[in-house]
Length: 115
Image 1: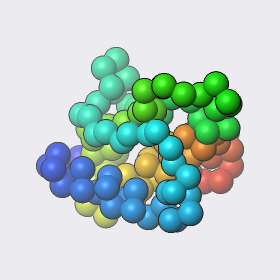
Image 2: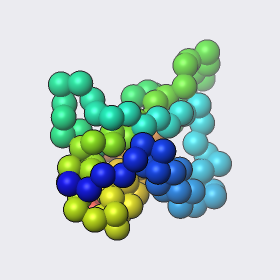
Image 3: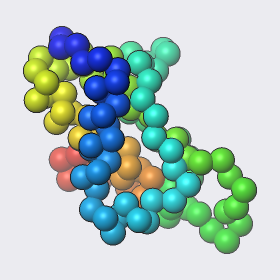
């Protein structure tokens, strides 16, 4: 397992978000991204989207708190042995969770290679 300090890991998450094409990034609505050490009770979880996907929002969608995307640092670091692997895994995890914001299922993400 490699160690990437929290502040550097947060930069990697930010850089991964910057790779989202501008057109898609502009469509992201009412979503906040966080970094946490790990999900209690789920030590292997790399990331989690919690909210109402854009495809499920209707005319009654207003006044909701922002959706949350959380990227979990420790599980990603446990999977990786080099900084390059961390950068790659952070990128995959960020894209995977952002895709959930757009309503893309885990099954479809597996088919597309973003699992």
